[in-house]
Image 1: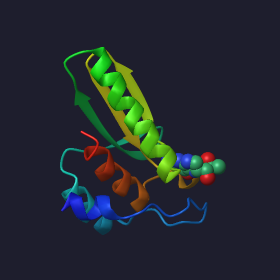
Image 2: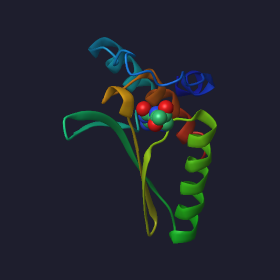
Image 3: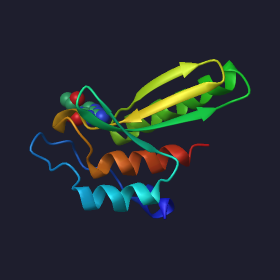
Length: 112
Ligand SMILES: C[C@H](O)[C@H](O)[C@H]1CNC2=NC(N)=NC(=O)C2=N1
C-alpha cells in the first residue's frame, strides 16, 4: 500500500491547496501505519521515530531524508539524536496535512 504512495510525486505547495479531508486522512494513514498524526500548535503533522544502533547511522539516515526533501522540494522537521531520528511532515503553506506529506512519509520509509 505505501509502495503505491511512494511512487507518486509531490505537487508544488500552493497556499490555497486543500488540506486532506477526514476520509482521506483515514485512507492515507492506513497506507503508512508506522506514522502517527500529531497536532502541534494547532497544526496536524505526521511523525515517525526511527531507531539506529548509534549516532553515525542516525546521522546518515537524516542526511538521506534531507536529500529526499530537496528532491521533492518539500521539507520535514528532522530531529537527530544518538540512535534516533524523528521525522515530522506537514505543509507549511496550508498549516496542515496535504497528500504531499503522505507521499513523502512513504518515500521516507523507503530510505531505510
Ligand atoms: C517557499 C516555500 O517554503 C516553498 O514553496 C516550499 C518549501 N518546502 C516546503 N515544505 C513543506 N513541508 N511545506 C511547505 O509549504 C513548503 N514550501
